[in-house]
Structures are given as C-alpha cells and as structure tokens.
Length: 222
Image (cartoon, rainbow, N blue to C red):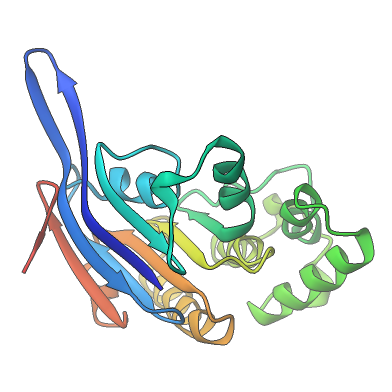
C-alpha cells in the first residue's frame, strides 16, 4: 500500500515560491496499477522523485507498507531505493555494454544476491515479460524499443520491490507497443504483488489503469 498525505514540495525562484507539489493526498493498494496524468509542468516528475526518495518533500508523509519514507535516515533511504523501489524510464536507461540478462541481474548484485540466484531470477523475469531465451544474451542495441522497455521492466522487478515508479514508460514507443507495455504493467502489478505508479501525459493509459489521478499545477484534481 502506498499512502501519501498532504505532500508538498516548494522551490525558491527569485523572490517567489514555486509550489511544485501542493498538498497531495492519494493512496494506491498493493497489486494495483495507477496512472498520474498531467501536462508538462504539472508536477508529475517532482512527485515521482519524492515517491522514489530521490528528493525530499518540504512537508507531508509518504508511507509504503505503513513505513514513513520521509523519516528515513541516509542509510535507510539508500536501502529503500535499492530494495523497495523499482524505476522504469522513458529512455529505458539500460547499460549498453551489458546483455539483457546482465542488465536484469545488476540490481541484485548491488543488493548482495549470490550469482546463481541472480541468474535464475533474471531468466525468470525476462521470460515473464516476454523476452525469449534466445535474446537474453543480446545487448540493448540489438533489441527493439519495446523489447528494451520489457528488459527495463524486468530489471525494475529484480529485487521484488514494494513500489515501481514508471516515468513516461510508453513515451518512446508506438501506440500499439505502448498499449502492450501498459497491459504488461497492469498484469505484473498483480502477479508480483507490487504497487505500480506511472506518470504520463497519455490519456489513453487512464483507461487501462486501476486508479487514475489528474495533476495540474501541483494539485490533484477531484
């Protein structure tokens, strides 16, 4: 369960204060896929950074499984980002000189998982997202955009995170492939029992999500 209460993030810009995130309240149950819809400048990216503990809020709370992330000290924040959160990016962010399998194994190496278990988990995840075994050793340049995003999704699941944050996950894909990827995320939320939050400007995603939130000028619209 993700629960956000009265979350605010303010920036100083000259003599004025910019309220990038302005008193947001939302909750998403475990196993649900949710979409945060909004135009550029609406506060989507700032909100995602706060949820992923890449930035600290001015005030408010972010609870994952009844733990308030905003109260974590540095070491616990590092562990939270490493083990409890998975990230999916518009540009995939795969390491170009590593194979698909090695890209998925990497987060588990950082988490101290032994090599045999890393490989087994990575192979299982790649199969789960639709990457056949003959492509496991291919580097990203030899995969299509849709395949690279599937590898990125598998990588985000590597350490069995409680929360996955997706930043415009279909932004570089054609509409057909994008819909396949969103359907895959919806399915994985349930099978992996993880909460998935995707920020996007694509209104079509709202039709596929379990929950949809509309963001404008840092506020959620009712």
